Image (cartoon, rainbow, N blue to C red; front, side, top):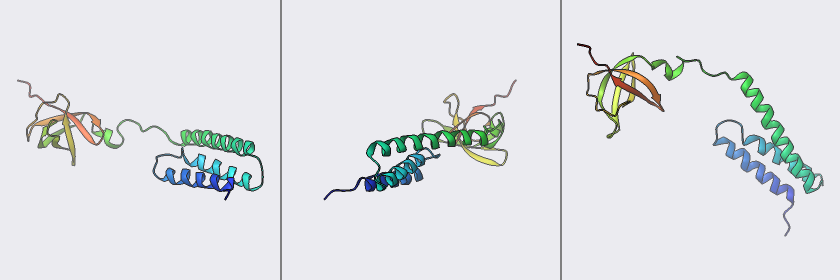
Length: 148
């Protein structure tokens, strides 16, 4: 029993489109569209060369156009937006910060965050800290030393 090539293209298209659901952005979607169009060309009786060319050209053009469109309408976040707004602010330790034990919570303004020590030191509850950077979903902090 011979499987018609257009079925193979449609299965490939479906796989690309389903894979797109599990990825970020629209990278894989365009390969699914290209494969679907190649499947239609196969159904119309065009040869494998036309099918492959359509797949490559259509996927490539859609990818390039979508990237340019996305770059035009998406701007980089300015500093001070989102979680980065906490960098440079002071907070208080609510749970001892110990990088080895992967423990530590701080309150900065009215928000509570998981925290890591910048220098790897253990920082006890109640110490005042300053946020130096973000690492994933953790604030990275240093102890504020009282000047004598």
